[in-house]
Length: 379
Image 1 (cartoon, rainbow, N blue to C red):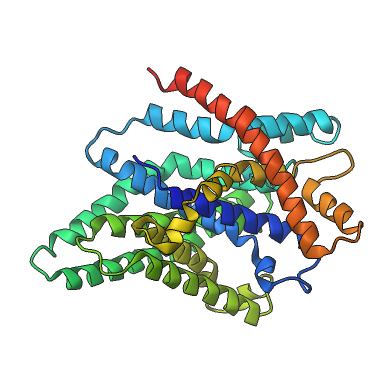
Image 2: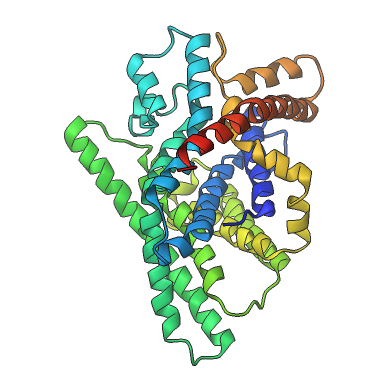
């Protein structure tokens, strides 16, 4: 269960994309077009979870040494300390702003299933409900993905290596298409059920719940499973990174050609546009896993540090302050008011919140993680 430094480094890029996408949201016509789509950092995070979980747990699940207690303890240690801190700070700073049920649902990470509370206390925290759902089903998904790859590769023992690899690629793509299509069905089923019991049609279920985002995680799993199944490597890591970047660039270009995020959904191929972001990202992960020039850059100590503080940056930059619901946006407005320019203001803003995230990581997340690990994982 070794770490992959380059995949920690790419977290920094995903968190940065979300950050700049948020703080530049009033300047999309003045900054690089890529900042219009900073939200794709979330697709990257979800796909990365799928890839890493498969890489970390496929072997132990297959040889039956997997421990649910240890697994869930690690997941708790990873996300709950900072989640609780952000929630408590928000309550202390704005004590009369949020309802009790809103606070309770955030502390339990169930707020993502309640549309009124999904984006209330700290907007980026909606993803934590999705992540929590994935944590609970990931071992089951890994079990079935591993079994499918095992059965597929059994009949290829006599085939040439190149032919076998091609068949596995096609098999993985077929599974990806199937899960993308299935997510539409999962989402509609969830919407129908909730409408039947509550009378409310959850319009955001397709993008803000596990039912519509499962394909992002599974894309990472499928590519990680492919990398585990192949016998011989034919494509260098940097080439795979380029291929993944082309897929992502094509999806975003198509989105732009349709008029942007709000209009692309009207196109018949839209169901595969956003899932392609996770697919392209997963191919990049495989390339970084194999190594290469780009992997070396993302494996640098600086990028790994930014990756380690990315979770803190992701949550802290939208913390609620008195009179200001989204801190980093208000900071951006203030810095720009000093005449420093949009781009420079954004960079300075990023540095400020990265320092806060680093302080959180150094003085809270890391010590708390060590403390909880000794209590929960040493048995």
